[in-house]
Image (cartoon, rainbow, N blue to C red; front, top):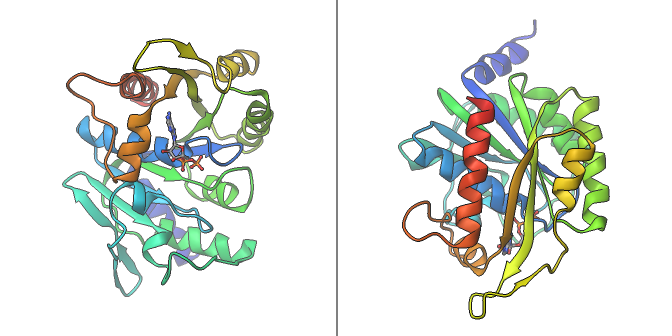
Length: 265
Ligand code: ADP
């Protein structure tokens, strides 16, 4: 076996579970889910790494409040940014010289970058590596699904309306083709409850993700409503709270994390 391949397998063998956060299309809250999932798992006492491989639009530095941070690179090793004792973050965004310039890379270059990230980032022993992939079923999710080895599972994020659901079908088929187990489908932006009058409005309809999970025989992880707290915490680089009086989204998200823990542990 080539030395590089051995090094990659050795690194991946130190990680108990790899969770690939996927979505059929952009803007459904995939990165928000990845950031909150990593933070919640760390708060539950797990050793967690969060890896952002969205070459064209890395959001994790902003969502985790790490925009000004760089990483240390020594020889072939990359030291991720430590958020706390048991949560480390690595993003392609830490390596780009300017957040304003687009990255114009073809598939093979992206494959090599992802491979290098998986092989060279020094996570140490982890319980979970949460990977935020770009939306769709292109080069990046394909590369990461092929490279991480097992055990790995996909968390598929969608919004409830038909136009998003059509793309989730492709995402489920993608996982099936790659024999990547699906941890479950999460329906995000599922209804909005007015904080003033309490009336519920289903802006993007409701139940589409749940119906699809049933139809495709995939576990359903829950419905997270539209909630201004998600936007505020995301924009200010903080995770959703997990204690005290919880907002509707924080409560729903905490149930989703419990399901993921139950599924994987
Ligand atoms: P993606 O990674 O799928 O492109 P993001 O995670 O970047 O999506 O989220 C897109 C926007 O939607 C962000 O501004 C985020 O704060 C917002 N958002 C995500 N989920 C929710 C939610 N449940 N309620 C309100 N806003 C949300």
